Image 1 (cartoon, chains in turn green, cyan):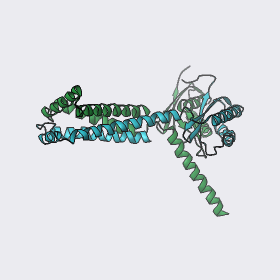
Image 2 (cartoon, helix red, strand yellow):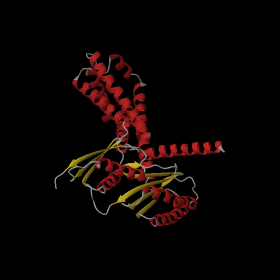
Image 3 (tube, one colour):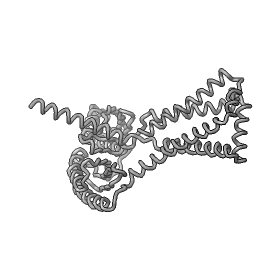
Image 4 (cartoon, chains in turn brown, green):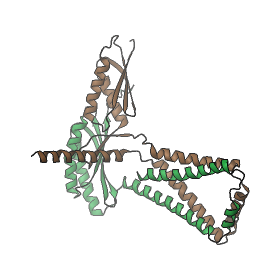
Length: 201
Length: 173
C-alpha cells in the first residue's frame, strides 16, 4: 500500500517536472530574429565566397581579379593597420553580442502556468497577468490608483490611496494579490513588493 | 534551444577570429596579414579549393539553419496532413471550440491544429472574462481536450493553451 502510494506520488512529481520543463521550453523566447539574421548572413557570406572562389578557379575575369586584388591587399596590409584592427574588433563585438543573446534567457510575453500534464501546456500573457493584478489591487478598499511592474522574480505593486492613515493596506493588497496569483497559478513563484503612496483628494 | 546553440557557436567563432586579430595586432603589429609563408601556401594548387570548400560549408550551414527556421515557423502555423485527417481535425476542432465556449467565464475560443511530420499540436487561444477562475477553467478544458485526442486518434497530442483575460473596464493606471 505504502509502496503504491509512494510510486504514485513519485510518478506524479515526475509528470509535473516534465510538464514544467515543457512549459518553460514552449514559452522561452526563441531568439528568432537574431537566429534568422545570423543564418541569412552566414548563407550570403558563404555563398558569395563560394561563387568568387569557384569563378576564380574556372578563370572568370571579374571574380578572378577580385580574389587576386583581395589577396594583394592582404599581403600589403599589416596587423596593426587601422582597418584590420577595426574589422577584428567588430568581429569580436559581434561574437560577444551573439553569445550574450544565446546565453541570456530574455523576456517572454507569455507567463507559463502550472500543469500536472506534460501534454497540456498553459500560459497567460504577461500583460494579462499584470492587468489581473491591477484589477485585484483596485478591488481592495482604499486603493484609488495602482501600477504593477514585473521585474525578474519580483512583482512591484505601487498603490495610491486617499486614506490618511493606510494602516495595513499594503498587507491587504499583498494578500489579495497572492490569492489571485494562487488562482491563476503561474509556474514561477514571485515575491510581491507593495508600495503605498498617499494622495490628497 | 537549437537557435541558441547555433548563435553561441557562431558567436564563439566570430569572437575567436576577432580576438585573434586583436592579439596579433598587439604582438605582431609590423607583419603583413598574409604572411610570406602563407602567401607561398596560397600559390599551392590545393589552397583555393580548400577556401572554396570552407565557404560552401558555411553557406550550407546557414542555408540548413534557415530551412529549419522556416520549417518550425510553418509548423507552428499550419498543419501538413492528408485531406482525411484535415477534415477530421477540423470537425473535432469545431466541437472542441463549442465545448470550451460553453464553459463559464469563456468569451471566445480559437482552436488551431498545427504541426508537420508527426509533430502535431493543438493551439488554443481562450479569451475569458475578468471574473473567470483560470485554475478551474484549466481543469475543465482538459476533459474536452482528451475527447478531441480520442476523436482524432492521437492520444499523445500536446495542447498549448493561451489565456487572454478580457476586462470590461480598462483600469491600468
